[in-house]
Length: 356
Figure 1 (cartoon, one colour):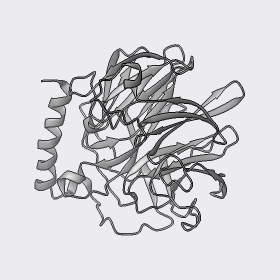
Figure 2 (cartoon, one colour; figure 1 turned 90 degrees about the horizontal axis):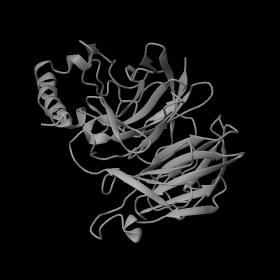
Figure 3 (cartoon, rainbow, N blue to C red; figure 1 turned 135 degrees about the vertical axis):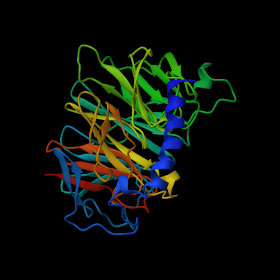
Figure 4 (spheres, helix red, strand yellow; figure 1 turned 90 degrees about the vertical axis):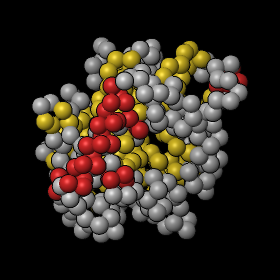
């Protein structure tokens, strides 16, 4: 039995035992999802605590609507750029105060992943659209510079293999890594011109395989040895690979169905789309944010239970307070405030977490 499969079995069995025998005392206090947190609500743990600012970035839905706030990045001028799958304004650009600066885009029916990359002095966006089955490189104003189409067009996939890309990451040399997170579960590596180099992963429970490879980023905290961090959401884990696709290790996050990892300084941040509560007590809206340190240890779970290690093993993590529904992405500004994008959250705008 693979490590991942045995870990999944442990969570399914022990998680239910914890919930039924302890009546959620492990996760207390636990509130009803429909409760509305106060404006001064403080969440998080240790040195990573935040004040919840629900009103940040709220716009007029009649003129600037959203469906799902999928992801957000910040450019060199401090502008916050968000992608939604609402085709009246796929890209929404805010300033730090939450004021609307501009919008563009009406072609991304499945607008999902958003990555920013700098080439010289110019910055570009990489957009994945899982419904169109394409990846687009654009300028910050929306001019399309490159398209990556279904891998079957160049013989990588068979005709019956789906391609529904969810995320990209850009390597130090400009290589483009595409996570086929809603499709055939491969990471596909192209050079900066969009020419195919290799692919790895695929669906499965072995350590080097994925189940919902939803996100990917380049972990450059060790500049002499950058690696890839790839989400395997249904495995509750991030999996580390070399830049050429060799499996290295797994960061197991029991109970947390994580989206993409985001590196800022020495830490990893991620939205947890839902937690094990979805299966323990049928609470679908059960997301939170998780933060890891340089040793890949969880140090804070804003909106979630306090991270707990027993004999070096991280214990089950679930939502603790109903601040969020489904956290899909986290963006970090220079003051270490967080902007949390949500999927399936009633067409609401991002939530700001002000660092305290």
